[in-house]
Structures are given as C-alpha cells and as structure tokens.
Image (cartoon, rainbow, N blue to C red; front, side, top):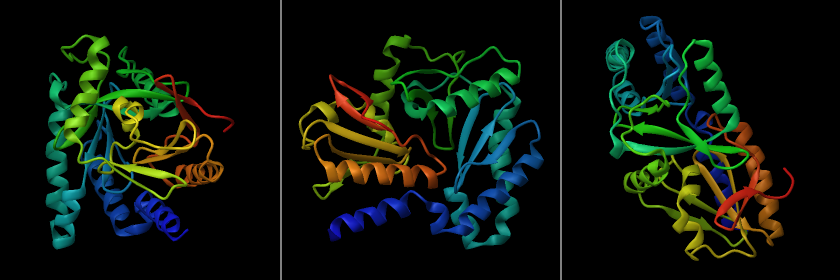
Length: 281
C-alpha cells in the first residue's frame, strides 16, 4: 500500500502546481496583466502557472510558456520589465500579421474536452470570423485539436490554416510528430492502477498512440480502462479491477476539480481499437 500512497501524492502535487509554488502563479498573473496592458488588441490571460493564453480577435489562440522567464525573474526580480518587453515583442508579430504557414513537422494533436472547444468556437463566432478550430472527433466526450508546437509558443490551428496535407492524413502526421517530440514515455504502477508520463504536457494525447494500447505491453485485469482528468495525467487500470476502478474514479474527480488544465472525470475503456465511455460517470 505504501507504493500506492506515494503514487497518489505524486499525482496530486504534480497536477496542482499552483499549490507547489504560489510565487509562480503571482508572477504569471503579473506578466499577463502587464502584457495585456501593452497589447490591448489581444486577449491575454493566465493559463495556469507559467503559461499565458493569448487570443486574437479572429479567435486564433496561442499558449506562451513563461518557464524560462520565471527562472530569469527569480535570479533577478529587477528584470521584470525586460521580461515583459520580451513577451510583448514575441507577441507583437503575432498581433500585427496573420500567422504564416504552419511548420508541418511541428503540428501535434491535443486532446481537449468539448466544453473547451465550444468556448473557443463561441469566441471566434463573437469576433465575426467565419473560421473554425481545426479539430476532429475522438469520442462523445473528447476531441482532437491540432496545434503548432514551436520553441516559443503553441498555436492552435484554424480551419483556414494552410497545413499542406490532406485532412485524412493529418492525424497520422500529428501523432508521428508528437512521438518524435516527446521525451521517453514511462509507466509507474503498483498493481491497482498505473500512470503514464511523458514530460508533463501531452499525457492525454497518448490516447492516440495505438501501439501503446494494442501492443500487449499493458497488462490489466480485463479490458484497459483509463482516466484523463487533465492534459498531464493519464491513469490506467483494468475493467475487472474493482480497487483500481474505485481509485481512478476518486482520483479523476479530485484532479479534475483542482487542475487548471482539466479535461473530464469520465473513465474510458479500450475496445475494438477505440476508447469509449466506461460505465456510469
């Protein structure tokens, strides 16, 4: 039972960075406010600790990491003004011009919940734009959104972006790109449930890696059941593992309620090559 407790603690603290470093949240919110004041044509908000969510009037959305900037700030808080200047400079080009053609080697799939999708689509509609989010169905609760992941930011793609690839081939391209970009995928577990980790940004997107789920390397009691309560959490148990299912339901509800990158507390079962809702929510 000790190993399970350790894993539970790891999950709770790894998925709730706001509790781990309140100063990071304060820094992120201060940068968001300062950048928003400098670039009123953009909607700039804090998107969890050390990340900004930036939305243009046409609905195009990017995510800007502040991790490196925070390290600079901690070394010398007097650099705050220079940090804001750097972020503003990187976003000014984004604000002044239509983003260029996406780098097809950096297009990745991102698992999102339908509530997120509808919020973004409503924002685009409110702006008067005829564009739409570039996405496809995954199941009744989740969708696959496509994004361009670059060194400075992650930009969610729109239906009008020139991706230079047939839509029927887009998912394979994006999954292959993500597989190349991600660090080593690791699994930790204790027989009750397990957890897949891959760097902390795209764990939920591992649902798209068919070789993980149909390759036979994941051994569970019954069919594979997973929970993705947040973008960086992927839990696994078996459909016949009563303790594992109870643990996943409890953890999924807790982590979804605490995580700014929440997805869903629904459990999914892997059958016939796809994930569908498992049992009652």
